[in-house]
Image 1 (cartoon, rainbow, N blue to C red):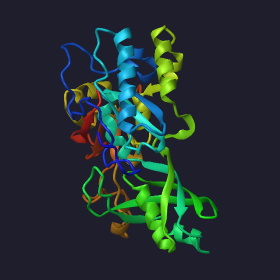
Image 2: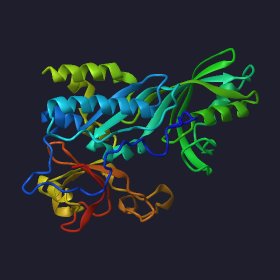
Image 3: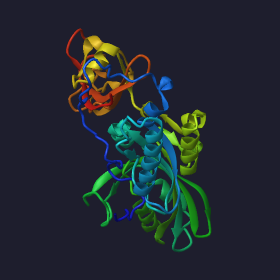
Image 4: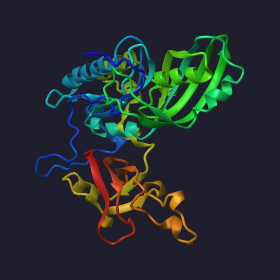
Length: 355
């Protein structure tokens, strides 16, 4: 495999071989498709639907790190539940160059179906900007101009098409500057090429620049305050095989933890069982909906009408939402397309069934 030459995450998170189908799959007759609540799952259940906020070290590729995670978990599953299936694969939150370190949340087993959620949130990086000459007196002001929507074209050796596109830089701060180096903190939209951003900042300053060391400090909803190393995972799995799963439950978290940044829809357990067969979420099965789940009229389309803010428009894209049962079991990903307060009709169209 050829490693990615760029620092940014790909347009799609890395997938293992696990099924990422949008339907619910088949289950044995009479089996309840709903999982146990997140805090009540056995170790094998946790490993087959979990997430690790992994610290990627410098050296291996994201693909190699993911393969190590998969193999280690499968060995433990074979020891604890030999009659059950292996994970089937893992999925990480976006490719990092081998030299880049930091936050690489990794989904296990059936949780790989929700890999797209990492495209919905922001990414945060800390980068060393290597200037090619002394910075100008207005250096900080020049850098601040890139805190906006910017145009980028992926580099030649990238895994996506090289078409001009826009990405939003939410925050761009100069944490420290000395001589010909500056430490930048960048919070940006998924898919932003930080190496290209550093190059463009150098051009704008008039002295040129390139990216030095890079570390990803956050991938919504995770950050680097509670990263776990590969060694942590291996140790936790070994302890679990010996009957002590306390450390494992700290390292491998229920996959629902990867959905906390999305608007939530709570559905009845009976509705969730219907979703498991591929049915959308109908109004009678909806218990509660976050306000952020329902698209609102855009500011540039607002009128003087008092009810304008309450009108949904065809041009307002519904956000990705996560549906849960009342006890916190992830059911599906989808979009709110109907009135949650209606007596009938489809409320959530499906994108991924997670049962």
